[in-house]
View 1 (tube, protein in one colour):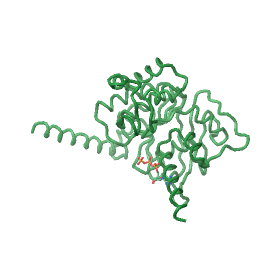
View 2 (spheres, protein in one colour):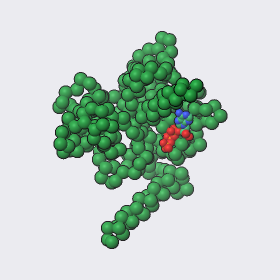
View 3 (tube, helix red, strand yellow):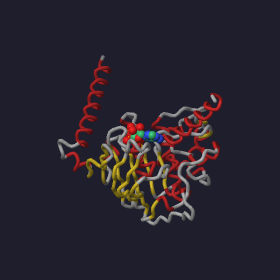
View 4 (cartoon, helix red, strand yellow):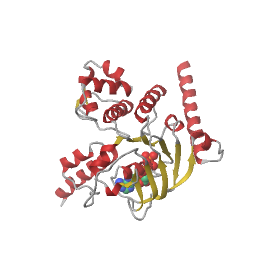
Length: 307
Ligand code: ATP
């Protein structure tokens, strides 16, 4: 029994890791021959995307029936617009993106893209139109060019370079001794979280999907990296329907609408300006706290530098 338990545990571990990473999932499932939780229903059709408008309608979801995570969430991401979801850790923000990508099915309500329920279409066609920039990108033990080209295997060298430039990672790559041929991944160059995220953005620029899910990393970035990532995101999200699981003020400020999730419901919604006007609001207090933390850190840095 012990012998059996170890591999099962290991598969469980890999499975969870993939769920978190959200990339290369189909390939990994093929490798592991693990059955996917969500299956295409008989007669599932191809998703036909005209504008890529997303709608969450009264969505309920729980991983464990005893602990509901989403309790009736309704919002739209109009075609070409950006909606940012914020809220305390564990509020269910990433769960929304997992449901849209259909790693799980909603238990009540529906998610539609251009009016088509995601449960009625093939997963392949759904995932083809969605570009996912996860919190932590899984890189292959291969060249940086291979890792970017993965977004569209037929892309030319020029297209790979242009995508890297648009994702603000071109200069970094050109300064590597082997440039685009540099090996990355576990057995190669280890990239920082911000660099990996820009590789994921370059991949997505090549894939050029009509819909984008961006799950921002929670880790703090220095101001310059944050600006570079923001510039890359501006390129990739332009004219694309974008759902951002946001942790950084820079992304949220420019969103067309901000959804504040708390205790399974939408606690507040509006633009950054509208939400900041509510002095006692959850959003306003969240950002005021974050701003104070950043200011305190900057003061500490100045003190250290003057020593
Ligand atoms: P964070 O800001 O910390 O990333 P989040 O708002 O994105 O948090 P989710 O990842 O959506 O939160 O998780 C919502 C809740 O569901 C959490 O309490 C989490 O522990 C739980 N949860 C997430 N994934 C699973 C899973 N596969 N099985 C069981 N519970 C899960």
